[in-house]
Length: 137
Image 1 (tube, helix red, strand yellow):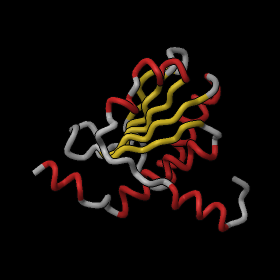
Image 2: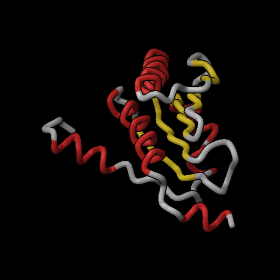
Image 3: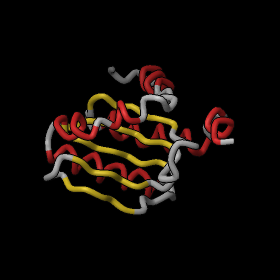
Image 4: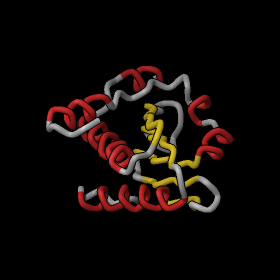
């Protein structure tokens, strides 16, 4: 049963929330932005969005911007875990978990490998929309 659930496309609302969170990471110049569809693999969330920040201030800016974006969309973040001093933060968006790492913490926790069997969510449509609007890549 879990396999069948996992293979269904993301709902429009979940896809939009995932892309909004990934868009925050892109706008704030995070690196290596990836999203995994973890439905049926964990009860924590449906999608994990991962990114790497180059500094502690950038980590704070990413978490703050994600919370602001979610609040403005009417779906406020539930909580934030971790700390920019320890190299990782998680913004709990309910069905989406936004993981913000410093490079060393991302390598240490290695969620990319841990969730490698999960389908990766295609975030390309957001990039195409930006390019269409004339924004530089």
